[in-house]
Length: 242
Picture 1: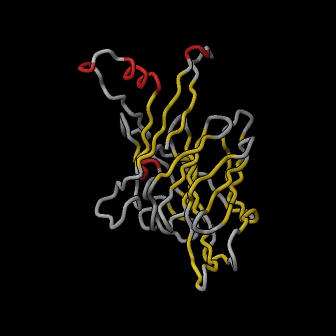
Picture 2: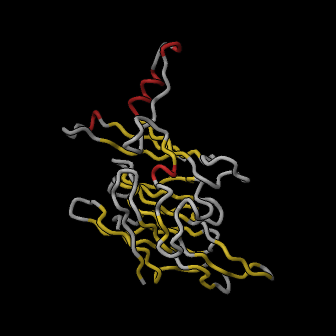
Picture 3: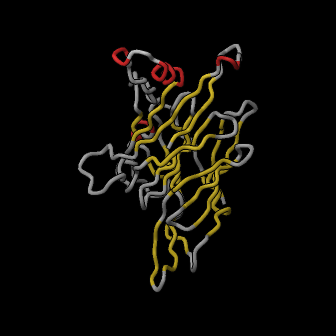
């Protein structure tokens, strides 16, 4: 999955506009897993000028692969590992488990950028996981991390209990994120507040906005958010509403 982000120089000369290319690698980055795409993953971020230089290079012997950008103050280059952006020490507001202890935090399925071109969602798609993160597209640091509602519903003659985040999308003005809780058979919403220049100042999971798409649906486990500091030492935002 790829996403493109424009980046304009200080003089705002659009003729010199470059952009970033974000690509997700859904491989496990935690060893000895019993299944594919269930623990960790990578995001690769390249500058378009580096990619263009590679494409237009006339000498195959002189070519160098574009260097991916870092997402951590401790790394000079990427790729960016999922547990680096969202540290294992983050704590679930409901279960009080750390991100290292919870299940199925893996398979960065893709990103969607906001209308302001400043933030992206991190859709983490490992089955049974249900994680949705927000990342600052400039600094590459985590802003927030949520876990969607776990639902119980009728599946044929039986009942199923599950959740997952397949994808999410920003609304037109960037004041909300609509989340596709695929295995929970629901659409959910995160409210986003910003200051006058578009910086996110608060995010809240709006439980009253959840719309179930299944039959005989009940809440098995409420949605939650993660608390703690990101790789830059800044506290994550997050709260519950409704």
